Length: 328
Ligand code: CA
Image (cartoon, rainbow, N blue to C red):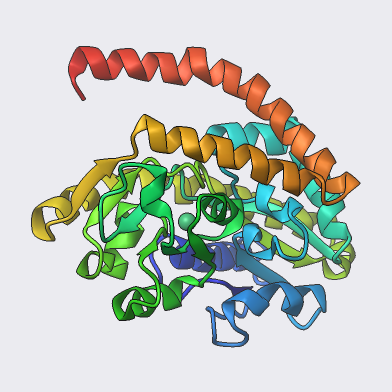
């Protein structure tokens, strides 16, 4: 099992390592996982080819890292103005998402299942205030996936770097800004040493799903029992990782603000409107790529409308009232 995460990196790395251990435990050792963090066997972004070729049997990764191979991959991590954790689970399990993910993955000899989620991500770290989309022009920012394409439309220069390489690039000035995940993860990265303005909410990754991607022919030869164990272990990690992020982000944010002088800022409506307009163009380009990309896009849109419509009068309406009455 190869991954795109540094060894022991909280949440993403430790989650993948926990999944590896559960796989072994749940199969009484029939599946013995040899775990390789990013760079220990192959570089983070080489994980895809390593598994597709059969050199390794599985990866734990964010599938949007493979959007250069096909834009459809981006939808199976998170896309701008996309789905939250609960909405994503609804789409994948009951909205046709898994079937389309299978169809895309099969073209590369892969089989992928949900195996973790970060929840809504922060908008990123900037060394100046972002008061209008003009402030994004010329900015060199680490931001992968279709979110990076949105930034490019607004005049920024997006780059995709694995987690282990962001800090050095930010400190050296090779990049001006970066997004990563959220307060718990970002505090370990010490981005505050180079950029003080911490923006929310991120439009680019509102519920990033992590993927356990397997070599399809290896998967196909497993017993039903081992396949079921893998599905169960991955589903458990999908749930447990989200719980850990939600449990730890709040306290981590408080420490960033009090101990490290981080300045918390909210993207204003004008900036968000610009994100919206640029996203529409990015989605047009993504769906024009191929019939399969269009099929994935249309299925995603239907989920956002149907599931999102329910979110609006359930979670969103309730939270607005709870937090208004109690001033949470
Ligand atoms: Ca991110």
